[in-house]
Image 1: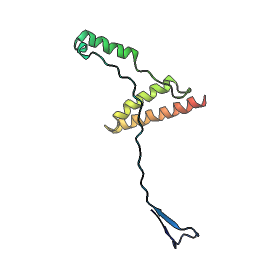
Image 2: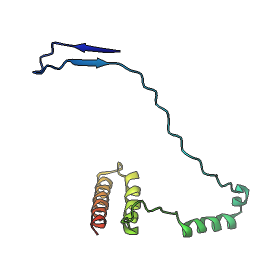
Image 3: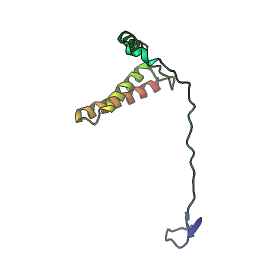
Image 4: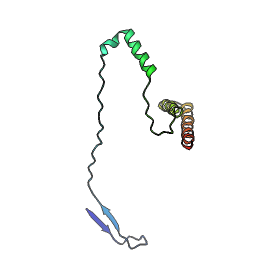
Length: 115
């Protein structure tokens, strides 16, 4: 439904317009990747559990490079900033540490882009 409101003192020959409409938003669906299933019963064995943890720490997480100028140094700073963000509301010192880390990330990003 649309309605105009002429006579508004806005110094123009335009009229104010009021419109009401209905909008239905569809949620964006993510493509699911096949999930890996592990035999969790084997993790009850302390030796296997420790070996599994060691392999995860050695392998680490796979990082994807979003832009070619993003270096590993920048990604490491982002990881540190992410950890500090989790604790930033604990105290003023934690907040300051987060702000310093955030500033360092922005500076390194800018420096890397200019290269």
